[in-house]
Structure formats: C-alpha cells, structure tokens
Amino acid sequence: MDWMTGLDWLLLTAGGGFFLLMVFSSLVEGEKRAALLSSLAWIGYSVIWIFMLANRGLPWVRRMHPYILALMLLFILVSLVPLFPRRAGRLPGDIARFDERDHMFSRNNLKFHPELAAEYYARHPERKGVDEKIHHRPELGDEAQIYHDPVYSPLFEAAFAYLDKTRPASQGDTRSRGKGVEADVLTRAVRDAARFYGACDVGIARLQRHHLYSHTGRRAEGWGQPVENSHTHAVVVVVPMSVGMMKRAPALPAILESSRQYVEAAKIAHVVAEYLRGLGFSARSHTDGNYQILCVPLAVAAGLGELGRMGIFLHRIHGPCVRLAVVTCDAELIPDSEGDWKMAAFCQICRKCAINCPTQAIPSGDEPVSRGVRHWSIVQETCYAFWKSAGTDCGFCIRVCPYTKPNTLLHRLVRFYISRNPINQRIALFFDDLLYGRRLPRPRGNPRRLISE
Image 1 (spheres, rainbow, N blue to C red):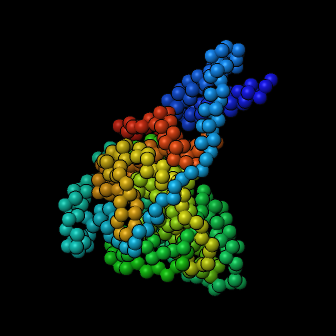
Image 2: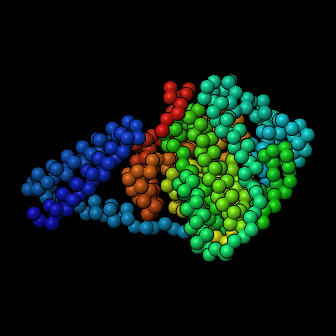
Image 3: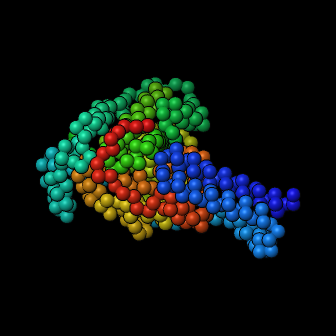
C-alpha cells in the first residue's frame, strides 16, 4: 500500500469517525435534526472515499485524487492556525459606576414604595411612563402568566424566598487572624473550597471601583445609600445550569433551573466567605438579590469567559448556561488573567440571540460605549416586561446560544476549533445554524414534565 492510499484510509477513518461522533452526540442530546443531517453527512462522506479507494485506476479519479487530498490537508492546516487579530480594549476611558437603582429589578420594586418612586422619578422623569406600564403587569408567579403552573410555579418562588432569608449569611464577624498563609497556598485552598461545595469553575480578580455599584437600590431598606467596600480581591463562583432544562426556555423549566442554581451559587459563596472570615480575613458574599458588585465584569476580569451580546456572562465551557456568585475579601490572592476575547469575536458574528429574542431587546450591531466602557447591553425594559407576561425569566437567548451545549467530546472539539481563527468561527456558525436551526420556535405552553435531569 502506497502512502497516498494510507492517507486515504486515514482521512476516511478520521472523517467518518467525526461524523459518527456527531450522530451519537445528537441522539444523546435529543437533537433529531442534527442527528439526521449528521447521518446523511456520514453516509455521503464514506461513500465518496470508498468509491475513490475502489476506483483508483479510473483516469478521472487518478487526476482528481491529488487535488482532493491537497484541499483536505489545506483545510486541516487552516483549521489549526491560531490567527486572531488583537482587538481594542473595552475600557476607552474612565468608567462610571452603575447605580443599582437604575436596574429594572429595582425600578419594578418602586411600585411597592411610593415615596421612593416619587424621589426616583423626580430625577428620571423619562423612565416613569415605561416603568408604570411594567408595574401594571402581574408579578412573577401570578396565575395570569403564560407559563404559570399552579403546582410548580411556587417552587421558584420558594427558592427566591429562601435566598432572601440567607442574606444575613453574607456578612459576619472576622475571627482572629492565625498564622500567615502564603498567597499561592491560600488561593489554591479557596479554589478547592469552592469546587468542593459544587462550583464548576472559580476565578479570582482584583476588585476595582467600577466593579461596585455606586448606590444600593434593590430594597427599600438602605435604598440610595452609597456602596462602600474596601476589599481588594474577588472570588467568582460559577455553577452550571442543566442544558436539558434550559432547552425548554422560556417555559417554566427555565426559571425553575435558574432559581435552583442561584441557590447553589449562594450556598458556595456563603461557605467560602465564612471560611475566609474564619482564617481572619474580612469577606462578604454577593448573591442573587444581595449584590454590592456587578458579577459579569468581575467574571470576565477573573478569566472565566466573556460578556455576551445578550448582556450576560458567557462561560468558557458552558456559555451563558451558568449562574454566578461572588465573594469579596481583603485576603491577598493571586488573580487570573482577563477573559477569552475570542468568544467575544464569535459573539460579534453570531447574532442568534438577537434574532430570536421575543422582544428584540438584544442589539444586533456593534458594542456601544456607555459609562466609559464598550460593552453589550440590552433594552432591559422590554426584556423584563416579557418576563412579567411569561411568568419566567425567559432565558430564550441562553437556549439558542451556540455555546449552550453539553460538555461532551464533540462540543469540546468544536470549542477548540472556533478558538483558532475567524474562518473557523464562520464555518462553525454555518453548521450550527444548519444542524440546530437559525430561528427556533418558542413553546406555547409548558412541557408535560417540568423537572428533568
């Protein structure tokens, strides 16, 4: 057997094996369209190469054969080349801190506090009209909402009520500092502690002033007070959400899973904060509904991923299908390098979340600059208005994102492929659209089974 025949068999085996992996993974994930198209691709690829091997003596096959091999090898070579132009930084100027009172969650709560509403809208009269329309919609969990279920909707309400009761655990007394601990030893111990209690990933960043809210605003208690935090470092905790549950977004399983992982993230953050206080450091956990900080820019600074077009965090493995919590402290920890901007490059060309957003709240253009920083942000008013109609936190953008895939061998290979260069990213996006669809239908009601693995 000559070397060209051996190369033919290698390409047949490797290519056929990859397509079979696609078929198997698609079947396991319940993606019927992807499984069907992958099966056809496997059959077609195998037939072509077997025909060429069986008919090497035909003149036209003999003439074409070197060119086909050359094209295949060129494709493989180009696929492996790391070639990403450096992008401009996200911080073109001084960054203004974000006021928590301007967040839609805080503005929605103003309906229950007329005196605070009067103060807020005196400063922001342009927001009063749109906010009042949102105030008139039912609150999450109301039976009038599209995806309400009388038995299971109270479950996510119980999760958020439990989170509210855990707020005192975010702070506590610092015990006497024991023996000095080296920064690398303490950093490793903190990472181990977070992973031991359930984090899928942990990152560490230096806490900057622009990571903090300027004023509190989520609750009437302490509303409008300046946020002061003298901590120097932040530990960012990541927990994964179930892809199977989030594939049903924006139906009820999405908020059931989202609230479950907010609870898990809070548990980990509270334990890590208490652990640090036990070692003699000042520490505060920041969990859903009880933040002093902005989680997403801290997660990016901690090297865990990127800010996505949809305005939420994209983890380097799980994409947007995660929830975050943060522990700030005065311990000297070793920070990680900043996030993977190659993910942002993919986000720039994809636009699938913007196309599928039920309210077109996600921008389809370039990243705008606001507060002195270039970043994606959504129209939070239209997004939250849909939440209050649906009775869930939607999550349809999470569902349609190409990064929302199980962490299997196939998807690890794809993530590596798109990390090499922009050509690979456009090819991968084309096949993601082909296999999974560019526009996905939204469910009209809840699935029969609301909780699954």
